[in-house]
Length: 147
Length: 106
Image 1 (cartoon, rainbow over the protein chains, first blue to last red):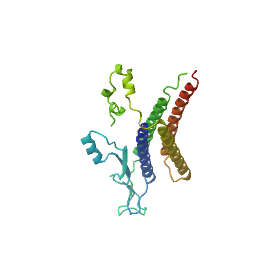
Image 2 (cartoon, chains in turn yellow, orange; image 1 turned 60 degrees about the vertical axis):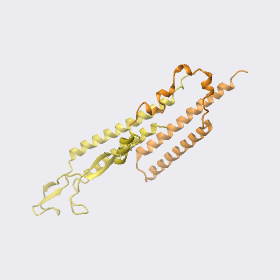
Image 3 (cartoon, rainbow over the protein chains, first blue to last red; image 1 turned 45 degrees about the horizontal axis):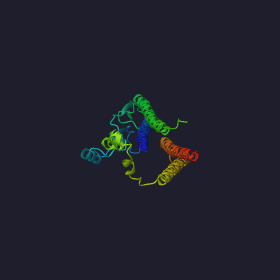
Image 4 (cartoon, chains in turn cyan, red; image 1 turned 180 degrees about the vertical axis):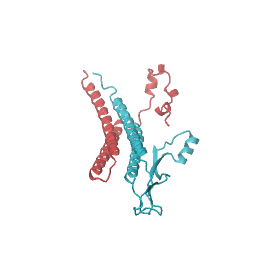
């Protein structure tokens, strides 16, 4: 049944949104982590989304005019290049010589906006899934109404 | 990704004009299907069984805690449900045809 490929694509989207939610949760939970295992403040993470199509697939499709389809979006977790937030706390054990503590550059406002976007995108994937499912169920109703 | 016309699998030119449909020669010369219906049905039932077993395994994993992917479980359940529905509809059609045959006056 070909409709299951739609389900797989939706599942890939849902996996991605779940991953983004996990990264946001990690960022918010570590918003005040001043020292990690490496002695540095926590580096905020971000998910970079790329198409699941490999370069080989792209070349194959270009030569043969299609045939291979990527397996949906693939998210990669990378550290965001955000400068740390400097707070003057001279008594803090992680303070530098000038008394400043480097907090992770996690922006709670943008993380909240990202949470909303992730939730909506997940819902959109679920909606696509439900649309495919109801189309398949409708197709199975063909011819069942006659007496 | 999917060309809407060629995705059907039958090029439009191969369908042919409508007038040739009713001729007996073309019907007699038609190739019988290579795989019979019983094989197809058995394969489909097998497929449904596999999908239900897969969904069952995933539900168990979710309950135990090794798998925390709720949407994957739900999607597997829906896939199993749709496959089962397809086989049920085919069964309904077959039974309907059989009953029509049995009600025939001789």
